[in-house]
Image (spheres, rainbow, N blue to C red):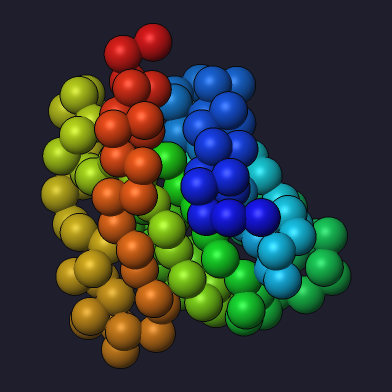
Length: 139
């Protein structure tokens, strides 16, 4: 499958959530986990966190080296840090943090900044299918 195909799956997953955020985690071109935001019931249940939990459970490990996380929006500091601790190898995201229309959803700390400060251990591709991901906020 292609990056575009995985991001489109994340976009569809986002439509299921409390807020329009969706994630797919893949390894070796296979979907390991997909999740959406459920933060209304638990503020730590962002799509990325839900997907990381699911992937770790499915694989029976906490080391997600070799996995790519596709997110419809730039991961917040909590989600980036969880990805870092899980050893996610690559993050591909669509909408930028500044694209999010609601101020209460914004923590203005960029994913690339956190990555740089933590040793650039995660390859990051930003703005992938950005316009399609931004459309989620206009539902």
